[in-house]
Amino acid sequence: MRSATRERAFAVPLTSPAFPPGPYRFINREYLIIAYRTDADRLRALVPEPLQVEEPVVKYEFIRMPDSTGFGDYTETGQVVPVSFRGRKGGYSHCMFLNDDPPIAGGRELWGFPKKLASPSLRAEIDTLVGTLDYGPVRVTTGTMGYKHKTVDLATVKASLEAPNFLLKIIPHVDGTPRICELVEYYLEDIDLKGAWTGPGALDLHDHALAPVAELPVLEILSATHILADLTLGLGKVVYDYLR
Image (cartoon, rainbow, N blue to C red; front, side, top):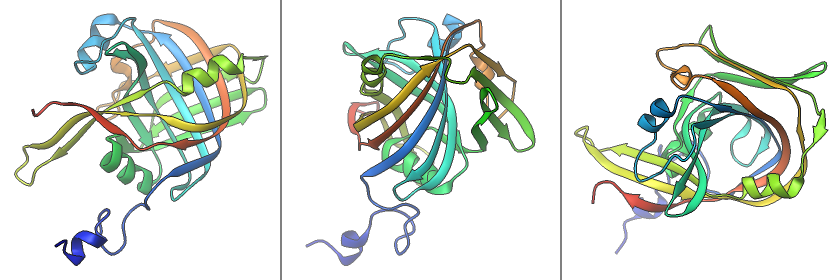
């Protein structure tokens, strides 16, 4: 027989969880994605097996979320690495920084998103789309793109959003040893792509002890993409257990 506590338990705290149960719908989710070439050896050292890195490419993402179920209004930023897993091409989330506690707690506990508290922003400044990341008083990242210079094929962009995403979920035991160490796969669902554009882009990364995005240096800008969409963040599944 299941206890009353087990029946009520969803997340911490028991009587007032930090985030509500899903699904989680996002309206007018806005992306600035700057793809760049980086150092191949550094990249492969940071991506966990059995994920495979085929090219030394990183996607630096700024994401503005003004209307999200249960999470409210917030912004996040971070690095996503194009990878493959058992023949499926997708993206591995290497690091994420955001300014809202519920999606930090929910993202880490449910899926294993590598989220930390910081101060990202994404906004239009006259003719430029500007993304920034501040960790405390220190500017860590600045990304810029010419505002809506050219439309992008929507089918291609939607296919990229529908690709699998991979996360390394780590939750420690009470004695500090790993209790959960899993590779998680999830998808974005019910995507209503409202627009996608490209333009000239630039990305500036600075060294920081606790936001080490510059560990993957910018060697060449490959593309800059601006996306606006409604979508649902789907729950995940475990595809590899490192503790077995």
